[in-house]
Structures are given as structure tokens and as C-alpha cells.
Length: 229
Length: 229
Image (tube, rainbow over all chains, first blue to last red; front, top):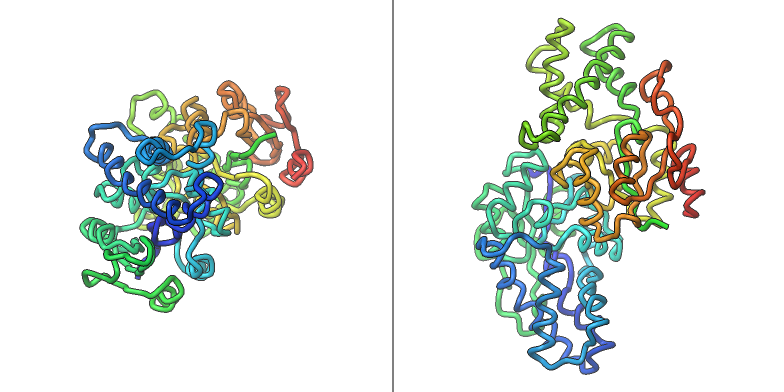
């Protein structure tokens, strides 16, 4: 049984695509164009972190990468978001809305387990998102705290070290099979929760568990049931 | 007006001396000897961190220093705390009791301000202490998160950087004039709260504000009044 649950956030706890699309309304009038903009912005997420993971670039927080990627998407799409509004747009990532089960699920799980986000988002981003959604964390782990972007193994091992727990007593909770595979390779326990509309109605990846994760749950409430919380 | 309050913890928020003395009861029967043991343990705190601050030793978390200092105090005093109990004794620092005003004061201040501990204690120590006292933090800053022990300037500047705030919008709250002087030198706002029995009835230091700190308050409730929270 784990003592701490650490959570992937983008996709697993929050609907980043829907939230970003809603937040873009003042700048991008058409709803489909907003979803497409969100997809293009997110498509630059992994490649931009790979520059850091590979060692080609020193660590910078995700807000910095998000801002660079925003400028690139504006250039690519010819959007008319003025320079003076771009910091506000960039901070939309700090105000993403949780999936409906998350606030109640975290409150329930927090009575039994240490709960921390373990996201590639930076500390202030996670802190603002927690306030926006009424969540309370025991501590904020993740990329800025560990100095490494997932799925670098140092990210997971350092998280367990900070928590002063053997890796097997730390459970990574994610909607992404790849995140869980990387966590398991470091000895962490694993829980999969499918989020089949993270990428919209036509999602084709991470629709189900692709390995025998320690727990597979429908949502955080089901996870609490399965962990006896 | 600050946007975030960051707190010294040992002495400012918790009665470390009384809590450690109470916790030592199973191993040290005499109450005066327990307080003396707590003082000796704490007396090694600054010198042990100075090894790290000076660069003579790579960063290690405070739990590591506390344990080394515990072994030294046991040697010095001829105490009979068996090796197998020492990890339990070391973890007494994770369960220190807050001063009476702290739980209510933090709950009130948290409605208006971002609240983070900025202590030399490590993340798990702060996390356990928060659960023990019913406090909820927005994030855990401090030595393990910033990589520097106070009063190194990097500790304060990195805290503001992680919070994505100009230093002047971050207020250091402490019962120690030296901590506030170091924070002010880095541009942080400052609030002093006297804790005249931190070191017991005969305390001679930090009995009052020794500079024109931005706020001087009797306790956290008075601080909330003075900040309009």
C-alpha cells in the first residue's frame, strides 16, 4: 500500500484542452479555431521539454517554454494576439479547470495519503491551479522541484527521495501509459485513470491501460475505493 | 502590500524547545535534563548548516544534520538513547507543536495571501509538521527547495523567483531579527513577531524588533489585522 500519491496534472487532473480553448475566447472568436490553437500549443510541449531533457538546454520552468511555444503558434497561425496580452494568455495554464471528480477525490484521498502534484508544470503554476480548483497539496513536487522533466528517471527517484519514502511506497497516478512506464522503471507503484477526451472527441491514445498497472480506476473516487481510502 | 507571506518555522510558528523536551520523555526521565538536551541539540544547528553555507560540504537536508547532531549530543551527554531508537527521536522535529495562535492565524491569512514555509527544514519535515498541526501550505519553499540554507541570499531570491513575484511582494515573517535583515537585504518585505519564550524563560535575544521592519505584530492574528486580511 502506498504512503504517498503523486499525480500527473495536465490531462490527468485537468482538462487543459477545453480550458485553454475557453480562455482564448477574447482573442480567437471561432470555437473550433480555439481548440485547434490549444492543440498546436500543446504539440510543442514535448519537443520543447526534450531540449532540456537531452541536456542541450539548461533547465527552465514550463512557463518559459509555454511562452516561447505561444509566440511560435501565433507566428504559425497568423493569430492577432498582441504582444501586450501574451503574458495573460500564457497564464491561462495556471487556471485550468479540474475534471469533475478531482476536487472531491483529492479531498477524500488526502485523509489517508500524502498528496503531491508531480507535473512538468512549475511550482507557481501548480499553486495557482490548486487555488483555482480548491485543491490542497501537501507539497508541490514535479519538474521545478526535482530539476528534471518527466519522464527522466531522476524526476521520479528525486520525488521519492524528497518524500523520504522507498519508491515502492510512492504511487504515480496518471492518464498516460508512458508516464507510468517511466515511474515503474524507477520502482514506483502505478495507478492509471483513463481520460478519454483529454485530446477531444477523436482521441486515439491512452484510451486504456496498456500494462498491468498496480491499480486501474475509472476516476479519483474509484481510486479511493480501490485503495481503501 | 505583499502577495505572498513566507514563514520562518522553528521558533516563529512552533515551540521547538518545548516540543522536543516533551518528546524526549521516554528516553530522558528528568524534565530539566530534557530541556537541556533540546538546547544542546539546537546549539549544533547553526554550526552544522554553516558547513553547507560555506561550501565546505555539499547540500544535505536538515534531517541529516539533525541526526548527526543528535549522535553528537548523545556522546557529549552520555545519554542512553539506543541506536535503534535514534531515528524515531530524530523525527520528533517533524511533529513540533505550533504556538496557540498559528493554526487560526494561517487559516485567516491564507484567504488573502499565498502562504509558504521558508524554513531550513526539509520538505518532508515541513509536510509532516503541517499535517500534525492542521496547517495547509500553498507550496513548501525553504532550504531543500531552493538548495540553500538561510541566511544565504540565494535562499530568499530563489524563493521569490519560484513564486514569480518581485522580492518586494514577498514578505518574510520571522521571530528572528537576523532572518529579516537577510531577507530585507534581498529586497523582501519583512514582518517581525516576537516569541519571547522560544529559548525558555531566560531568553535574552530577539525579544523585540531591532529594526524598522515593515510590520511588527504580536502574533499571527495581529499580523492579519495589520495586513487587512
